[in-house]
Length: 124
Image 1 (cartoon, rainbow, N blue to C red):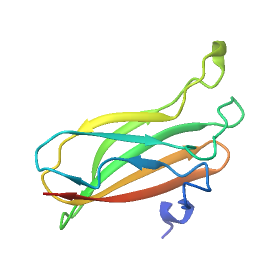
Image 2 (cartoon, rainbow, N blue to C red):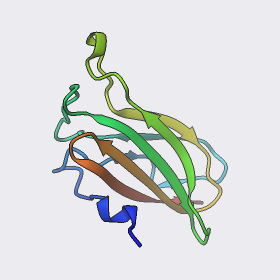
Image 3 (cartoon, one colour):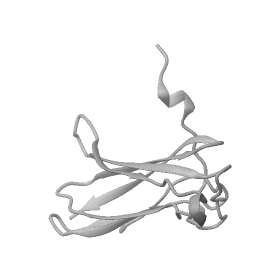
């Protein structure tokens, strides 16, 4: 059976402009909201043109010992020069967690495909 995982690329976001960067605290308090930000190109700017752009992010949380991840958000970027409007691929949301786990982020570049990253988060 084929798997989508064969197309997922990874890398160090400091040297690769396509890797989604997960900005959030390493530790949070149970039930208290915090900001979760996803971006690309913090160190090396990603182009944002009609020809080469980030189309979307998908973000998931997988709680420790949970069977499946839960989708946190689906963020689409659709302005790539149409009418002189350009999206910057940055997504911000606020979430609350009740258990430790891992945040996963996917990004999609129209030329270079799917990229993934993850970050563990501890809930106290």
